[in-house]
Image: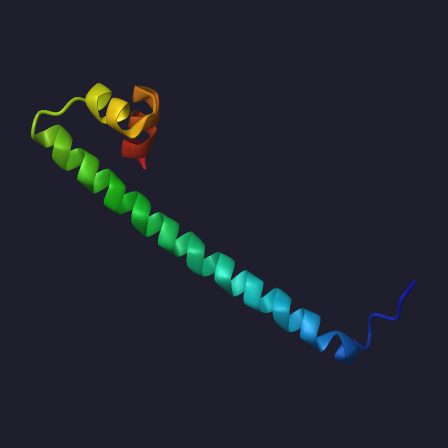
Amino acid sequence: MADTSDLSRHRSTIEQIKEARAQAIHHTRLARQFALERRDLMQSLLDQGVTQADIARELGVSRQAIQKMLAC
């Protein structure tokens, strides 16, 4: 079993892990923002009389997928 008490020789790898984690957190936040924007845009279409089925057809997804997107 490797000695885990001295990680100094692994500092570069640990820093890469930290950076990858930071990027993952950043992208998760962006994805949430885009999901909210997508929902607001779809809701705007619905308010104008476009149906969920029409939106689904245009996006190439099921109506149920649209329902799930709107539920977020």
